[in-house]
Amino acid sequence: EAQVTQNPRYLITVTGKKLTVTCSQNMNHEYMSWYRQDPGLGLRQIYYSMNVEVTDKGDVPEGYKVSRKEKRNFPLILESPSPNQTSLYFCASIRASAERNTGELFFGEGSRLTVL
Amino acid sequence: AQSVTQLDSQVPVFEEAPVELRCNYSSSVSVYLFWYVQYPNQGLQLLLKYLSGSTLVKGINGFEAEFNKSQTSFHLRKPSVHISDTAEYFCAVSEKKTFGQGTILTVHP
Picture 1 (tube, chains in turn yellow, blue):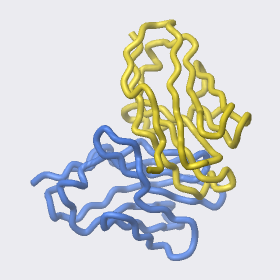
Picture 2 (cartoon, helix red, strand yellow):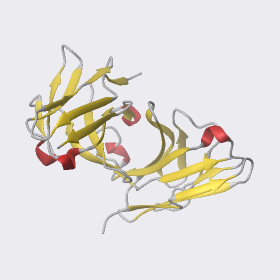
Picture 3 (cartoon, helix red, strand yellow):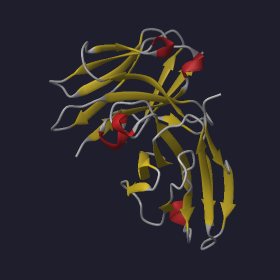
């Protein structure tokens, strides 16, 4: 089954404790992206990747890091989480980077993160 | 830069009634427009998209949307809703897939 898989789905952590949210897709998609969803703000892009070893900032990159060492994986790293990073996070992918404006985004089921 | 405004944060309707969810965008260049739906505790999935051609676009689950360039709008409509349509709906525009704030549609029996 074609899918985007995120882990963990739910996490409660404390300020300053490094964490990684993993994202993996089995569709051989080139383009991958991370979003955070907050009430009243919709989805905002954190980082995106056009291909292996090619990443770039989205609209709200502060406090986050990403890497793209393999085509299928695109982990989101919070080096020192703070309470304002409490949010619902989504990983998504598009088949080809050339289609990043026209193509369909395939989403994971989301990771709900709480930072105390 | 492109932006998207969804004019209603919540829309309550009764089952079998028609519904319209409003979306306006701003852009100085050609746009591609999308509607996504998010069911409770799930990720988003594509309902429909406008790339070019006919301004009336049909999507899944009986939804349709009309691209209106002069009014910079892309409103989503369904003539008769079901309880199962209860979800949050997001309008998005092409650049970086910029999303609107979302509209929660609640269908009451």
